[in-house]
Length: 342
Image 1 (cartoon, rainbow, N blue to C red):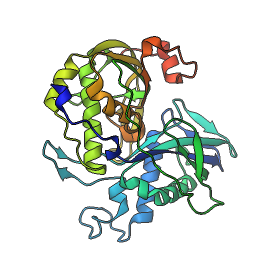
Image 2: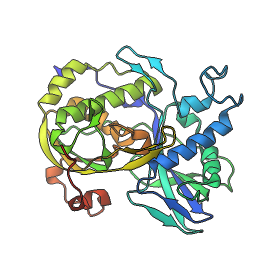
Image 3: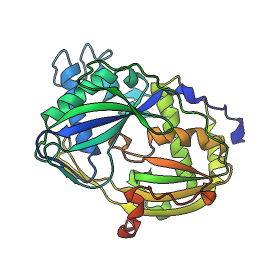
Image 4: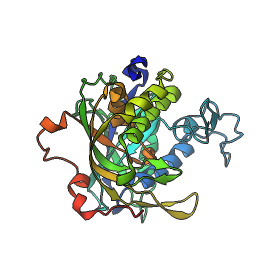
């Protein structure tokens, strides 16, 4: 039975969400979903700061094992007991403020969030410096520039407190408390705040081919791998038992397809990376999956999580919860979407 899997300890994976506040110093254009351009600018700036040998490629560098750049941005390939990872999951997630292209005039403010996991938490000062350089160097179409004005930590229950400003120079001491165990429930809903890409044979699944089993197993795999690579170790879940339990969970889907196109600078081509958005309600024996689903609110699930895809918020006992007027624009705009063609 799935219940025989060890009860996971949520402290196995230290994590925190930070909000990076910026002010445009020149006109700044952000695309419909800026996760990709933000990540590219961050990675470029981080490498310039961290690299001491100035080699063109990280592979073969004598400092590869201790350099913070691959540890944070591009973990090297690794042989795993289940599969070979060309790149293990990175210990961060970039979360844009929302869907929709934006034009910021000089002087206008904006923000984005970043979830840091494991070692990345200890590298927060370096990460902040990389973002300062990235923003000053130009981001988005036209290379608009900005300055980093503050960094706040987003509390687990909501709310923000400032941990850094350029004037203060140093980071304020702050704790990163672990997520608390979720409340037991047999009904839960995921409000998908950015496109969720769950794949089969390399192709993203449209709404009518998604099942609770696919979703739940994706969540436990994501949480397990992140704990293994960036936490206290794999939690030792019984995946065979979990798969059986997941097949018995049902629910309702109010999902639509939202397309997202990004340009890959590495492959020099456009890539279609759409996914599903909306609300997905699950009912049944959810106890074995609640820890992973709870962590997924920070880790996201599915493909392209580093860009901010696969983000969701959990709604407990959704049948008894009033409609939230502050639900994301992605959810409110469902009538404008179309199903992905079969």
